Length: 422
Ligand code: LLP
Image (cartoon, rainbow, N blue to C red; front, side, top):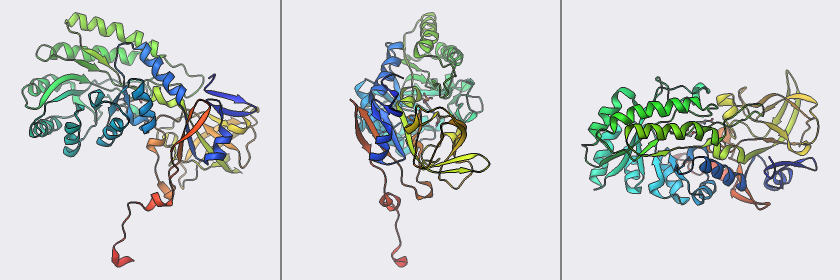
C-alpha cells in the first residue's frame, strides 16, 4: 500500500518510517500504528456511507490516541463497558455520540451510563427494568435502543458470529415488539432506536441485506407505536488478511445497504437514521506488530521463536486467524523455506503463523505481523508475567510513543501482601 507499507532498501517501512529502526529504538514486541492510514480508512468508510453516523467499535482498539484521532474525524463510539465509555469520553467523543452496547451490564455500569448521558442499547428484559429504576432515581430519561437477535449467520468463525439463534446476544425476535410496548410506558426510558450486530470479519454483502430486511420487518411493527430515530445494524465489515481473499469495499457495502434501507423506510413511511458500528475495518490494517527473533530451531517444523506470543496478539490462538508475516529486515528477499512463527508462551497453541514461506530467517531478525490494529493490543495480557508491549504512532514520518512498555512494577501494582506474610 503506497505511503502506508512499503519496502525501501530491503526494510519494511510504515508511514515512511523504517520498522527495523523502530524495533531498535523502542524495543519489541511493539505495536506501530500509522495515523494517515487510520484517518484514510475512516474517511473512505464515511464517504461511502455519506450521512450515516459511524459509531467506531471501541473494543477493536480502545487506545486513547486512536479514539482521539477518530473523534477529530467525527466518529461516535460503540462502547461495550463502563471502561470503554470512560475512555471514549476522555478521547473527546461526545456522550450523545456514544452507544453503550454491553450485554450483562451491572447496575453500577448502568448508573455510570445514566450519569454520563450516553445512549444505551438494552440487551435483556432485566436490564430494561434496572435502567428504568436507575434513570428514575437520577431524575433522568435515557435514550435507548434494544438489541435484537436477528437470527442471521454471516459466514465467519463460529466465535465471531453473534447474531445466530443460539447466540447470547439481544432480545429474541418474537419478544421485541412487546418489549417496545412495555418500554414506552416505563419511567426513565425513551425508546429511540433498534440495534443488532450479526458478527465480525464478514466478507460478503448478503448477510447485511438480510439484516436490513429482517430489521425493517420489525421496524414496521414497532413504528406503529414508537417513533424510531435510528436503526443500528452493527459492524462486522471484514478485511482481507490474506492477499488473495476478495473483500467488499465500503462502497460495495453501502451500495447493498443504503438504497434498500431507504426503500424500506419509504414503504413504511418513516425516516430514522441508519447507524453502523465498524471496528476492524477502520483500525486493522493501520498497525503492524514488530517482534524479535530469539531462536530458529529445526524440529518437526522449522520454528522461529519470537518475543510476541498470544499474550501479545491472541487472534491466531483464539480464532485460528491469519496474519501476514514479513521479515522486516529482509523484506526484499525471496522466500527460501517454510517456517512456523511461535511465541514464548508455555502452550503449544502459542503459534502466530504456521507453515509460511519466508526468506532465510536468523536470530535477531525482526518479524512484522500485519493487520494487527484490530483486537490486538486491547486483547493482550500479562500471562507468564510478561509486561504488555509499547505502542507507537507514526505521523509525518515521525514516531511518537503513545503507550509505554509495561515494567515489573506493572506486574505488582495491584497486588497486596498481608502484613503477616512480610
Ligand atoms: N458492534 C458490536 C455490538 C460488536 O459486538 C462488535 C464486535 C462490533 C460492532 C464491531 O465489529 P467489527 O466491525 O470490528 O467486526 N476479537 C475478535 C472480534 C470480536 C468482535 C466482537 N464484536 C477478533 O479478534 O476477530
